[in-house]
Length: 250
Image (cartoon, rainbow, N blue to C red; front, side, top):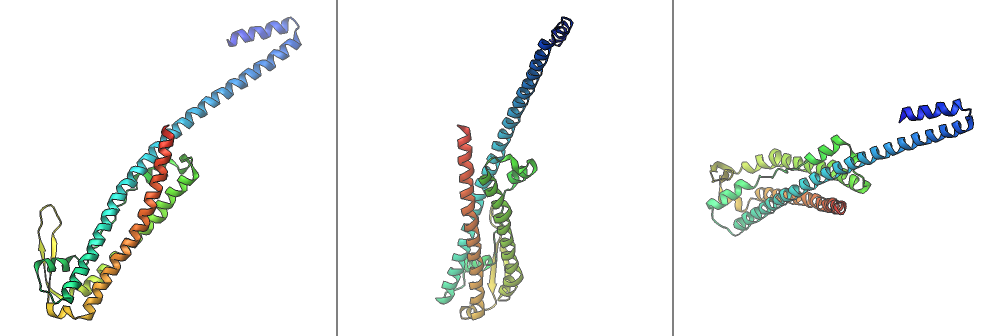
């Protein structure tokens, strides 16, 4: 093809058809430009298609991570609610002049337990490595960044704070009231701690001990508040992502 055009130019020049040659040369340049533009358009289309596929893949992974986090944090809510009920049950037994039972020693042993929040960030880390610009919708990109950089960081900080006040302040003071601690092995479960009071009768009307129980409840109520705040955002952002993915599938 190139040889053909070269011969045609030479014939036009040799026949003295300069004007025709100029028109031909301009036409040839236009064809070359059009060819380049078409090639660029095809290349851009391919790149956009690849980017769209990557975007969908990353968003699906993030959505799956959020689904797992929902279940995990809902379980953490259950554990905190059970912890609050345990404290309330202990208070009820003490206030009603109840007796010391194995179940009660087990309840004493669970007072200082705080759940550890397990959060899945593999999808977000993948997005960070690829580049946030892969997410087309600004609102989705901002929502995802806010959840992981702000809310997840906030939740982990609150978890660390709850753990610190529990094990640095609450636990040492709480254990002062107990003379013996035993461990009960349970099938397919973590060992249960059994706390035996030094003086069970004294606990019933001991104001300082009751204040420790109230503080244990306060920590767990704080955990519940933090968890519910983050869970609300997880549900909202997962819904946004899932709707976008559904729209892109049509």
